[in-house]
Image (cartoon, rainbow, N blue to C red):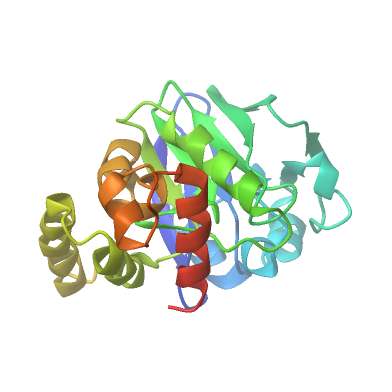
Length: 253
């Protein structure tokens, strides 16, 4: 499986997936038509499938025009069939989707939206998390509940540590500043700072990261940490309550 990162809008990422075994091409969350069309014209010359994590416009904005030009199929959660433009293939939660020879497990991740899903390839050790899990952060809770978002993050936390994570936005530097404010004794964050500085200097994306790296550095996956809990004023460690407090603080950070 080959993955190309396509920058869209101001800070979105869409992803081109190429299965070399079958010459099958997929696009994850096409924010807009032009940058994806430009890349396809220079490379694969076709799109077979568009895979959608959730219905927000900045993740589906290119659906209609890309489908019209490339005659591809749009794939998404059947529960959002009336909110995902031009959808063709309706997925059930916790089902599978085959992109050529690449098998993706469909994992239900409510919280950011009610019917958010991710695409996980166990064989290729890769997960596309949309707006649920970011590098050093997580998505806002719009349609779901805090409990749903927390449980969705815990699902992702259980994936193998060497799983590469591709998310929907370049928010890493801002997320780092938040993590460093409340996770002050985390030496892994100091190491991450040098790495991020190097990426910015070279104008490179901070994605992908790994689940293992996120467990060490992402404060939303570290809400069970006693030092963080005390920093936030909790006398007893309560992972979910700490998460809720962190999410509220991040909304106004």
